[in-house]
Length: 388
Image (spheres, rainbow, N blue to C red):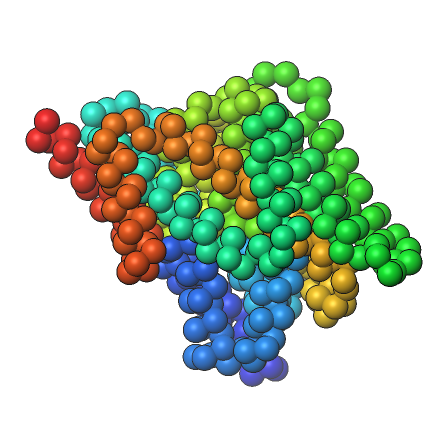
């Protein structure tokens, strides 16, 4: 009996140890996280085959939320069932959340100090370079044909006209889905099956936070829950939603505070979505941080549990495939638009422009880990402040 209990608990212990370790060491963004997971679960531990890993990665890209976090959740599910699902996701997120919470406290208490100002002076332009490099790499993968390029450019233009990022994401996805499948297909069954699952989220995106005025923890939680349920693609797409909600609509943050939050999310290990923890603390203290974190990550656990049994069917559907192609290029358009806006807050003199150019060169030419560049940018900011 004791042996059986030990055998049952062994996969859970393996999941806990692996994803807690990755939570502390997975620097460099989603692509780096996924590469580290592959090394651990395919090559070293042999939990899944290469093909199974690719299938799970494809499923992660098909649902909203942070891709690398969803990969952790999927792999925990594969290894240890639903308890492994919860454990893997939680332990991958927890270290970054804790670190970001401490940094948020320090930012609120010391953020206006000369040292903090100097640190962020060097970090912000590096963050812009990191986002540009991610945008370039994703564009090469996502823009497969002229239609997708046109949708991405249209989203970029329409964002500056004030159209909601949610409307642009779903509009891009639906447009590509219709154009790609309507010709030569009746497609009624596939479309009818897809639309009920999309409609509630589309409606929620437009209405879930309607009617709230001023700050409240409920508004904060529901806003992050909405974002977590709707953001496709890289964690950097999150920027468009954060700016639209917290800078433009609610007015709780400035562009400068937003890029500071992104810098902290990039500087720490684990998912970039822990930017939510930082923002939650800035506007609502410790309860705001906890509610923001739960709100933005909760949909990922729900989606993974719901989608895992039908992964193979999702990958085979031409309707779903085309919809996601459209969503991905729309997300890239949003990323490009927000990068242009945040650049205005980061590039304040020739030195910050030069820092961004050097960082971009190191990223593109030598593939330097972005975490080291962020650290380097902060050190340069401190050195320059000491010299001046």
